[in-house]
Image (cartoon, rainbow, N blue to C red; front, side, top):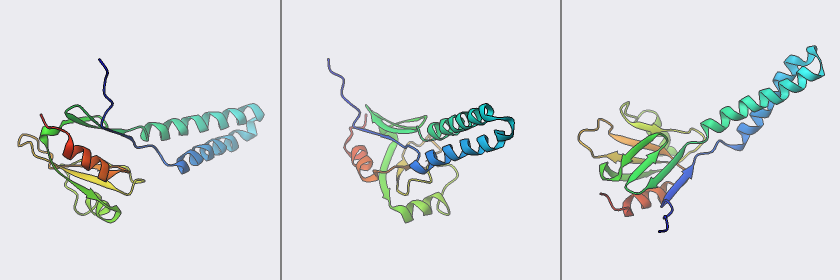
Length: 152
């Protein structure tokens, strides 16, 4: 039996500039420890860079997947049968749904460094969540997958 791949999978990685910032945090730590000598300075560079890189990596390691009959967004797992219409949001519309149009009950998988998003209605009457807001670099593709996947 051959396992099929997920019809959609995306990892929302941190932007490249965050890795530069991680290195600059390490340089800052090295400068702080410079008066104590060369070894503490090098330790500060390595340790500060490593801690900042781990923080950037963990924040940027969230995934959006459609597997079987579920949409998995971060730690949330939602059956496709509970989802309604998907609306592709361009950068301007996504900003509006993150700010003044936002509903506090909505599930937001928000990454500010990703300008586009997908808004998916939740049709389950027992779920108080009105919609999902998913930051994604490929909102059209995710919407297409959600439309074509069979709901159980």
